[in-house]
Length: 210
Image 1 (cartoon, rainbow, N blue to C red):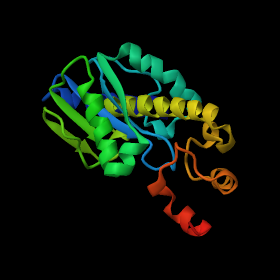
Image 2 (image 1 turned 120 degrees about the vertical axis):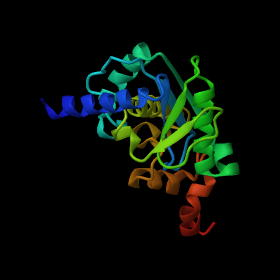
Image 3 (image 1 turned 90 degrees about the vertical axis):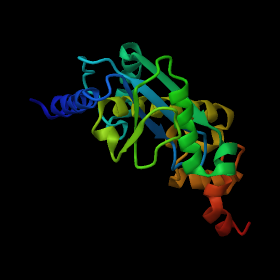
Image 4 (image 1 turned 120 degrees about the horizontal axis):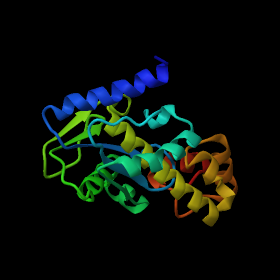
């Protein structure tokens, strides 16, 4: 069996094991905790049993093109899904971890089907009104979490492309808000814009003497 198919099969096998205890569960993941700019996104996905989505994997291990191909397939095949976010203002007010958990909470709350169980990537769960568990590197272990990672990542990428249209001088469409050399060069030239996260620019401000 090709490695890609083996990984995909293992993801769905893991979910089958979870369904022995919780027949309807959702996977949750976030995208955008590390960048210097933009909102943080999260997605919650409930996949039906007895399906496999060819090529599904942790979004970080997929090309942007492949993620964009998989996202509509996930949306079509899911029993339910929801994509949510927390704003830059919320990130600054409550910190990035709490903002990511807030986005996860919103994604779960927005599902059209109420799950028996919520399984989130990482080691800190959001506050939700049903049983919840965490799974470190869950996006590489669970199909449902992997699907959520793809939806969260593609939604955030789309938002950054929109920001690129509003603030073309920063190159958001290319670096998606991460602290690349080109991004810092744009900050040197233009300073931060309203989409930037001030708390993430402390070292930049110190360097510039702000």
